[in-house]
Length: 394
Ligand SMILES: Cc1cc2nc3c(=O)[nH]c(=O)nc-3n(C[C@H](O)[C@H](O)[C@H](O)COP(=O)(O)OP(=O)(O)OC[C@H]3O[C@@H](n4cnc5c(N)ncnc54)[C@H](O)[C@@H]3O)c2cc1C
Image (cartoon, rainbow, N blue to C red; front, side, top):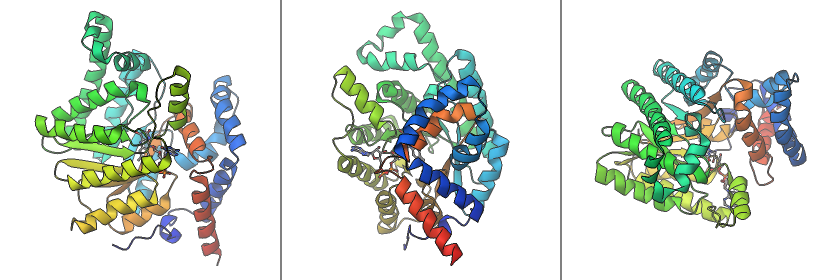
């Protein structure tokens, strides 16, 4: 395998000069961290005031990172990606919308997304945040009282509430299983993760008997997750189901550290980046070494981790398009990785969120923050875009 992530011609073939210039402007702006800090604080507030900022957001950050406001709008992006051998993970962006009605509506919407994915040739997965189907406070209660898990049976309302969450997930996974569409369950804040993990395992036990439909996610910026991966694998073997695992480094590092500091408990985050990288790559290796039992999604923008997974496939004599190994990057980022992996025939997708602008604001704010940190992605993205613009000019 001879992959180079430096090939910007492949990376940006799907973008016109005008689109590339727009992306250059956006990433240059996100390089000013003071601007992003102010922007990420003010935007949710401004959105609520009803000031006419939709148009501006839509033409800039939304266009870069989101497929569209509706499934129909998003279809065009999916088709374009498909022309380059790039698949799609559809992510219906509901975050922070509480209330039983909203959870039921979200369930219907996820089912609609599954049904739509089943009609397309390049949409093998959808992704789900459990906080789109369950009250954050309920998840936190379940997480905080692991010893009382049976104890919450004393609170009938909460038991019934949790059962409704389980039913929603069951309904979605059942349709997904019928239609052969994978369901990726996102990892969120560590203080709600335990019930999310348990629900993921419960669904895997039901739906992953023959093939992998349900995937949990582990964040390797947590120091306990490599161990958790091994334990999950043991449980899957004992219970006779196949493990689906999406590997990410993690998107809530600052928030995690701040909370641990404020509340005076040991931070769940690794001591440094090198430790995160180490556990990430160990997890990639572990999954590929156990490829008969585990289906893995290498969800990362890190060159080395992606190259490692690709190299391991070659070393083990496995085909590039092995159905148990899939790569994914967020839409709007790391096209150099996605499109060059696709050229080599590896299974690779863009994680493509869609939804009304107001609903995807939290997602957009995370992307802005991720792309504004000095050590982060901005420099990489900007230099690749500049390189490609210069190449086209010459
Ligand atoms: C397809 C896809 C799905 C995703 N799903 C989820 C999800 O379900 N849940 C979620 O939380 N995130 C998710 N993410 C976001 C992901 O966590 C971030 O994009 C990711 O953290 C960026 O890391 P990277 O692997 O691209 O590599 P890099 O850019 O090499 O790593 C940056 C990351 O390393 C970690 N890090 C940085 N500095 C330190 C430090 N000092 N100490 C310890 N760790 C450090 C942080 O996690 C930081 O984000 C997803 C990403 C993709 C591509």
